[in-house]
Structures are given as C-alpha cells and as structure tokens.
Amino acid sequence: MPVKNVLMISPEYYGYVMTGGLAMAVHGLSRALHRQGIDVRVVIPSYSKTSGSDKFLRQIPKVDIKTAMLFDDKGIRIYQVPDVFLDPLYTYFISRDIEDSVHRRAAKEAFLAANFFSSGIPVVLEHLAKEYSWTPDVIHLHEWPTASASESLRRSKFSNIPIVVTTHNAQYIGRVPPMEDKDLILSQSSPQQVRVLQAQDQLFASLLEMGVFFSDAVTTVSESYAQELLAGMNVDPRVRKRLQDKGLEGILNGLDHQLMNPAIDPYVSSFDPNDIQSVAYGKGRNKLVLHSKYKVTAGSDEMQVTMMGRLADQKGIDLVLSAAAGINGLHGLKLLVVGETQENRVRQLLSGKLGINITGSLDFAKPEDQHLILAGSDAILMPSRYEPCGYVQLEGMRYGAIPIVTHVGGLKDTVVPFDGNNGYGVIIREATPEHITNALREALQIFQNKERWRIAVMNALKEDFAWDGPRNSVGKYVQLYERVKEQRAA
Image (cartoon, rainbow, N blue to C red; front, side, top):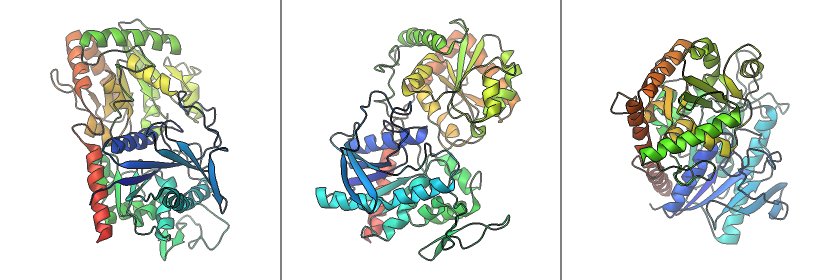
C-alpha cells in the first residue's frame, strides 16, 4: 500500500538540537523521504537550554517559539515553526525537556519528562487532523525517549496507525527508575529484582521495551548491529527478547550528500572529490587551518589522525589514552582528539596534566568545526568497542579521510580494508591499546607511500553511502512502511 504521509518523532533533529548521529539520521532520512514525494512532519521536544548553545547550527535563525504557539491543551504546549530543511513543511516542538542529550543515564526526571513528551503526540495528531486534514500513514519513533508514545497512541483514536520504532543505540533504554508512586512499581527494588511499569496488562522494565512491544516493526541502524543485539551483545535481556519477538531489522543509516559535500561546503576550503589534484590541494589547505585552530604542531607532510565524538569508553577513548606511549613513538603521525566528556581522568590526560603528548579539545565540536576536522584530517580514528552504525567514518570518507576502525557493528558494514588496490580502510583487529597502535602504524606506512595513499583516498571518495544511493536505505524504509501499513489494514 502506498505511503504518502510520515510523522517522525525524535529527541534530536539536525538544525535544532544535535549531540551525534541520531540527529543526523532523522534529518537525513526525513529529507530522503521528502525527495521520494512523501510528506514528512517532524516532532521534537522544546529544549530550554539549547537557545544560544553550540549544539544549534549557526545558520539556522533562532525561533521565538512563544509567538509560534498553536495551543495549550492539558498543560501540553505545541509550537509550530517552519522546517528549514523540508520547506514548506513544519517541525513541531512539544514544550517539555527530556534532557540535553539522549546519551545520558535515564534518571527519574528524564524518564518522567520522556513520558510527558510522548503523551503530547496524540495532541499533535489531533491538531494536524483538525487544521490540515493531515493524518500520517506511519509514525516513526526514534530512541527510548519517544518510545512510550507507542503505548499512548494505542490508547488514542489513532490506535490503528502503524508504528515503527528505531533503536539507534540499545545500550540506552530508559530503564524504569525508583519512584514514589507505588502504583507504577510492581516489583520493589532489591539487588535481584527489576523495577517495572505496568501498561495495558503488560510489565515493562524500560521505555524501549514498551515501545518495541506496542510497535508494528522495529529496526536498528545496521545489519551487523542487529545481529549483535539478537546475539545478546550490549543489550538488556528483556529488550533483546522483545526485539526477537518483533523481528528486529537492520537498515544502514545513510548520509545526506547535499549537506556533506566538500565541493560546496561553506565551512572548508572546497575541493572536487573526483579530482585527485583538487583533493590534495584542498585537504592541504584545510589541514593548515585545522592545525592552527587546534594548535597542533605538525608539518604538512605529517599524517593527521583525528578522533572525534563523545569521549566515552564505548568509543575506546580509554584504550587510546592507554596506547599514548606507543602512539607518540610513531614519528610522522599526529593525533588530535576532539569531543566532550564528563570523565575527570580523560580531561586530565587530554589537558596534558599527566604527560600525555596528544592534542585534545574537550568542547563539543560545532558543526563548522566538524566539517573542518573531516576536511583537514588524513584519517579518522574510531576504536569503538561497539558501534551501531557510526557517522564519522561515513563523513570522513566523503571528505577523503581514511577510516581506522574496529570491525564491529556498522563499522564492519561500511569499511572495507585496503589491500593495495581495493578498499580504503584500516582495521583495528581487537579493541586493545596494542592493536590500536598497530593499526595506526599500518596506516602511517600506507600514508608514506604516496601512490598507495592516493589509491586508498580515491577509493574512499568513490563510495556512495547516500540514503538514496546504491544501498538504497530510504527505499528499504519505504518498503517497511508499506508493509506495516498493509498489515494494519488487514
């Protein structure tokens, strides 16, 4: 059955609030669906702390949501603002914070705020139906903070609209916290017992578990990560059982080639990715700017490797810092680490207090800085212990930066090791300090052979991970939407 209207619900959306790949994925998929002729509307929380934050994109004009308020129903304020990406469509804000980032521990306040946010979704649908005669054919929920909307929708007049739930990182599930309301907790806390929430005669230990149960289909962001979750790696046993029952599907995240395009990128010295001379000249100029901005002391002929993202153990930052002595022994290679962390040990090491000679920045990289890092780096380091999909390696390849990655999850699905003629990446065989150093040494040897490096870079630039590219991830979602719509109609 054809799908014409899709409602996206997410804690993050590129251009309004972003802490990582989730915002990029929802934005990119929405734009790709729009190019397919599908009417997409997006609903996100209204975050009080994002105004003026670096997590806003600077080219997006700030919106005075007080003047854009549509209505106030039972304490739920809904704001409508023009969507800067899907003009003339709209993005809708529900005025209750979940938290500054989905990648935080689900405390009681975040848990309750997520439920409040989700309870506003039927209100948005009421407004769209009344004012615009618009009803979605499919509702797509992203990550645990939106998951309980599936249950509230099933209790509403919109109960027969099919629901797709996507988990972008199943480590974060919105676990039920201790609460004073005894009606909500059926199994009181002890080291052996699990706190649970009752909904429609079912018991759930997390919001993600609830969302999966009331959905029509559930996906994650790469095929290999789906296999890892079903095998029990890095996932709560209750969530894993729900994923198995629902038939988890892995659909690889795509890249927005209009947004990530070195030929027209306003944040970097542009270059033609199809012309090796233009690539070499452009990346050389961007490397100089990168070194100046982050105070990296290095020659233009030295290999610039950058690790960028959340500096958490999942990403292997502790392994990189443990490998510092070996990395510093690789002459002709410079390592830059850029990202945010709350860990004091990481902050001390990156600030040089413990004698580690690695250049670091502990600030959230603004979008323009992220683009500069991609364009000015020779290689991107991603020694993740697990990685659902990963965006930095996709973006890095788009800007001619070779990925140096562990062979897990979405990294396994997107990075082909370079053999001298084919492929483009370097594989970290195990997530250990020794194997990270060995992979960096292998990459440096390729870099110092200019012809081999040229081949690897051009192979990476030829890869097409666009949502509507050869892998056609957007087409797979359209097929999924059509299938669940047909199943619901039957």
